[in-house]
Image (cartoon, rainbow, N blue to C red; front, side, top):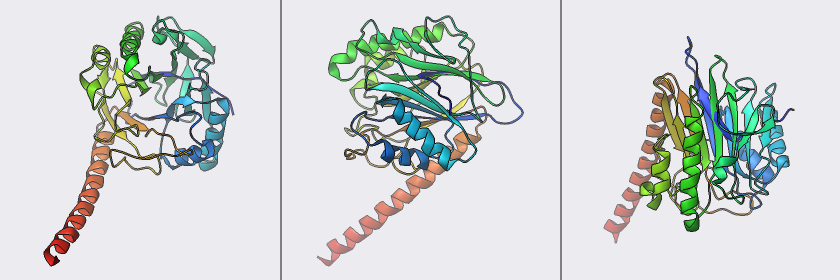
Length: 316
């Protein structure tokens, strides 16, 4: 099993006779506060994922365990991995399927730190502060020989980091400007409460100067406090792309339900977010149909609960 480093992903998909679809899932693992075997089992439950972007990865051994679990569940498929060099016990990481994606050299003009094997760190995302994490990136080629870059991010946390996050957003904008001709996906934990005070905040406004935010259909939070802190942004697509994002449950392979949730020493306090990007509307149609079916099932449960309560009230 080889390893690869990734933090940023730029996506350029070439025109093809068949639909091209990329499924990328981004997840904060809550380093040091979760169980690697437990999370590995939850990863295996997620279906048809081409690319994983992780934040708060404690060390390389975490991704080794994940790849072993994924390869056991997918016989004959090899998964490449790498973690970032910087970040201490809260590093960044990527895993991808080698039968669907291949790493290629970055050909943009941005200043990067070469990590070998075509992977790099974008130190400018530290925004001049050595205590912050860089972005981890790689340029990838698809089966139809289209290419893209992925950036996996973990921005500065909390209220005292608001000004830092604006600087980090500006660094991502600069990277996009210096990497023309290739679509880019930036995902991860941006620590911007997008469904709360962050929705009108300066960091999100700065990102939207260059990036398209792919809002999930779900209104639940990605963090246990109820805030949507994890997100995906895309930019640089030269033609129409159909993109959907959904907040997934930590266990199983369904969308998340409920705004608040508990976690323990085995589970991460974040939910993952899934991006489906396609040059055909098929994936978007299917995603919306699945979401509608899930909402209808939830509505039926609520109707049944209401019916039971009304019957109790009538009897009383």
